[in-house]
Picture 1 (cartoon, rainbow, N blue to C red):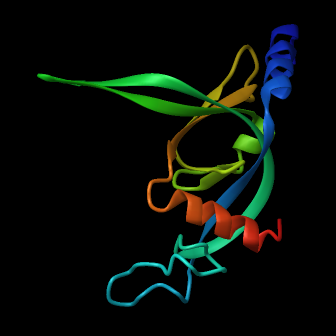
Picture 2 (cartoon, rainbow, N blue to C red; picture 1 turned 90 degrees about the vertical axis):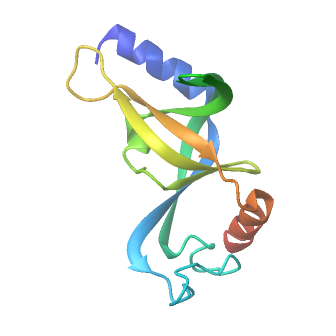
Length: 148
């Protein structure tokens, strides 16, 4: 690892906060309704996500930035959330997993590994979308399950 890579890691380590990764598994939870395929939002096993879960403690520097969507006559702006983290934590995450930071919950939409001269990633940018359906209730339930 060169001097530049260590400098980037130092910046991320200085800005990161304690967060949690909720990693969705392959097994469908027993709370999922057979007809509608909807999970019970009050389920303590899957937190309403409909799959078995693994919860890992991670560190991330989550920041906002403005994004724009341009399509012919439509020009919209929106806030995009980006989580900067070292490869140690980002390798745990996949699309549709959930990141909880404080009282905020985000869905992972995309992950981009950043490299310099080395083959292994130095850090990753994880693109996040705020959880829209009852985010406060979801976070409260999450901390109840975690006994915090």
